[in-house]
Image 1 (cartoon, helix red, strand yellow):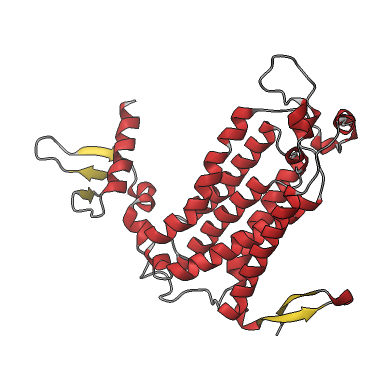
Image 2 (cartoon, rainbow, N blue to C red):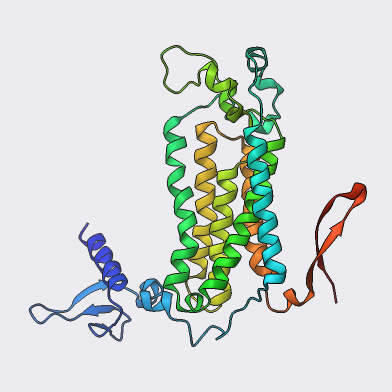
Amino acid sequence: MKKLLLVIFSLSFLLTETNAQELSVDSTEKIVITNSATAPIIIAQTADILKPFSPAEFMRFEDKAPSTSPYKTSWRVDAPIIAGGVGLTLLGTALIKKKHDLTDAEVLGKRRENLPFFDRGNAGLYSLKADKDSYVPFHASFVAPVLVSLLNSNERNKFGQVMVLYVETMAITGAMFTMAAGTVYRSRPYVYNPAKAGSPDVADMDRKRDSDSHRSFFAGHTAATAAASFYTAKVFADFNPDSKLKPYVWALAAATPALVGYLRYKAGMHFLSDNILGYVLGAGAGILVPELHKTKLMKNVSVTPHVGLGGNKGLAITYNIR
């Protein structure tokens, strides 16, 4: 326990002190705090293990990272994409609200054996606690891109651009999710829950009939969390290519939406396939939006008005391979 407290103390010291005048590294690579009242205290074996977690390592990469942004943004390209994403999100939300409730006969006709074999694992599960718990990492992921951009000096110098790309990422993700949820009727796993009198973790018939219970495809919480988390990691890696924190940032980006997906699965809100698809689409948006805005790549992108078959109007995004 004493060793654990010493390690925790050393971590908290490094995370709260921005200068290292009170720290020294001896010939054995041990971190030592000098105290006038007591003998030197050895608090960690290897300096290199704890050094990447210091604020200085996290915030300052000016000497290692490019002085300019790795991305190129343009209102001519990005504004229509954001507007289109927001517009489709609003349309999808309207379609969700117009979805009709199911009848008692339709609900009672739901059978676990009619599901694909890979989606039968949580058929019938319903947990109010897991549903509530899923919102903690879900909401935290939305704050992460803003917080990291403010803490990291390289990103902070391009904060406006980073936020534009973040909004674009989430607009695209929101459009994909809401349009799918608004047009596809797929009952949530808890709809398959058998009635058990007196059990708080069983959805009643009113809950099962409600239109909200029939938009399991696909997992919006998982998708949004993946988009925000992977966007945070991707932008941090691009602005700080030599940072020792990159593996940890990527690991956290992968784990956060996985946790949300697990809790949504356990809550009976989404099937396994819904969560996997949401994870992949969200992660794809979080990585590809910044990647496609790399300075060289954006030179080949153009957005133009387009009229398709049947007179349908929209925007055409074109990427020229040169």
